[in-house]
Image 1 (cartoon, rainbow, N blue to C red):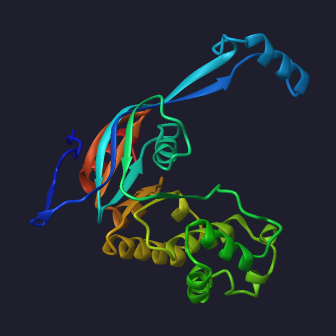
Image 2: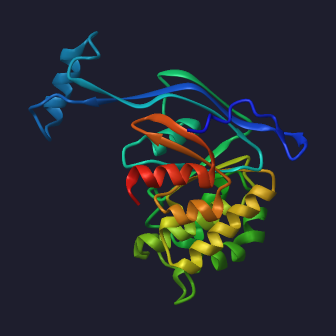
Image 3: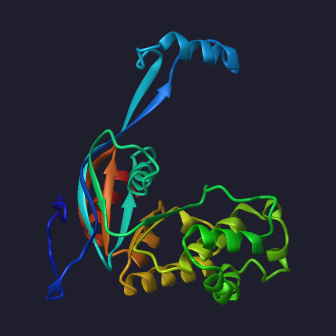
Length: 268
């Protein structure tokens, strides 16, 4: 197995700039495992009151990420692979600051941006309004969004079969919504962009545009993380892969090396 790329500072004869450092990270979910009173708000409140100082009563702990360490560098595109439930999405959410850390440390250079297919959208607003809201949420100015608006719409391809951008988002298919979401996120230069299964939606034409845009983001000196079950997308996009299994970092190294071992493991 390849060793983690921790501490490797030289690349192409120059200094490598770290953007994300994950040091012995542990993430634990706490799930209410108490039985009875299903669907009853009163029963749920009674359980909370009964717990009092004993926070562990009726709570199940799920250790989702276990002692993961790695360093990501500017200009890298890093694939995250692993079987279902291996901790990939949990790791990205922790790096983005959306989940609390049980133990360990995360250091980032700049603000990580997490793009997930299941991220909430304002369904009652039009696609146009969501472009502006999404851009503002990422820190873009209204002028920047206006200047890039048509580029975002054209990249998403949602207007190829009609004026869908002026319709409420609730009228969109899941694939159309995912394409627009990716297009908004990809319009901005990111210090760290994390993409959770975004390339699994849409046709091959859009996937190829997405892959090319990720390569452009790398050239613009950002770092990209990509979670995908599509090994071809990982091969076409990423120069490094982290393989997580049961919350542990099983392998970290060049894309072809890690995918070769992973495909042996999964039989694919």
